[in-house]
Image (tube, one colour):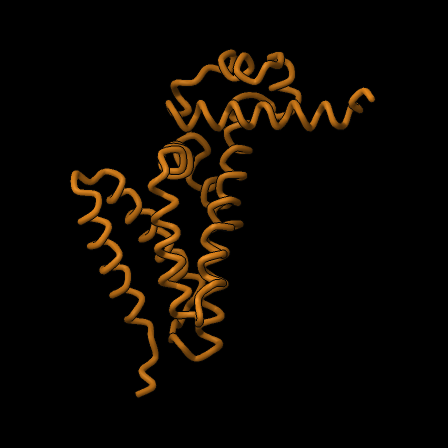
Length: 198
């Protein structure tokens, strides 16, 4: 049975996303040409512009998918924890694990702010990582586990700290030691929010 136009379009989009993600992850956005992407995807240049309005639009779609996957990984770790505090620590660990993947470091943390601009990158983060952090802080605050005056402000600060932590680890000469130091420091930061019920 021949594929429908809808199936062909979906297959073309997926081929472009897959090729773009691999190439952007390996070499970075500035070093990947549109012609190389379409050749790797086995489609025409016109298909790239039709589905994603060019290389820039494809990069954004790749980032949005990657951010969705990162958030799902972190949410899985958070939800598997016995309580909200343990969930926060598990979420930090899962985020740092994910950010050690070269494609995540290159696409989501290095290229995205430069390629898309800070405000667009932050808007995508707000739908994914920032949204999850905000949700977790609100749950912890409502449950009386932490005290935070402005969850929205602290969530943005925490996201920035997590991104910086991931970059510190990625660029360290001693990755294992830096990871331990970073997690300890983030734990200290988060423990400062805990309500003393003793």
